[in-house]
Length: 305
Image (cartoon, rainbow, N blue to C red; front, side, top):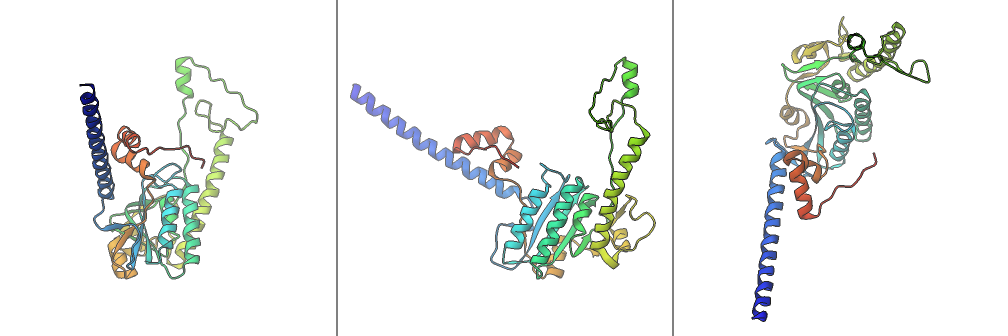
């Protein structure tokens, strides 16, 4: 009887192990399918291609470190696109209100570097809903810019904003205590009265950044730019107005640019969106991603950036 019980136990263990392997493989296949479907753009293939194609790198949302549209992600996508020998042209497809001038500057510099290195590969910026501020800073590095007639384009300006709570603190009977080493260390502190000298200093810094922005626009657009009153005032323009002002070269989508200008209708997406675990976390949620990591032994490790 003991022998039979031991044998039965082994059989059950083997059966459980086989079913465990089956469900792990089934779950893995499901997750892979989700990742493939998640690319979400029926017009775009993914990965390297042996056929001549137009590479697409997307800039979506706020531009900043740690964001989906960070310079690290965008630059990696651009480098991969140019590296592929089947790439005939590159499209930077933009839908962003802007963000960090530093991150935008990194991308602008990298586009110019890649253009010099790969002189036979043209670069086009294509705006969808919005291409403003830092996003337009990136776009001017492209050879040409195309927009939709209803796109919002421009906002060539720089800002810094915040709130002041000194009156609120007085009403609540709260005393602000701020100690600094350096008379300007508390610059723009929201709980301290705003000093005129601080305002003038910050305006000077913003003015310098604005001058840098304008210089990049002039360099990128050249004689196509029609400098009118208000062009560099931070105003935003429709796609049609942007074309009239020389902020853009014409109306057209990514498909139009690939087909009519690049001459390679097939679009291949090179947008870098993080590693497998990061993408699962965004798609399925942190809990589901953690469960998958435990099942397949996939772990995350600390990163130094």
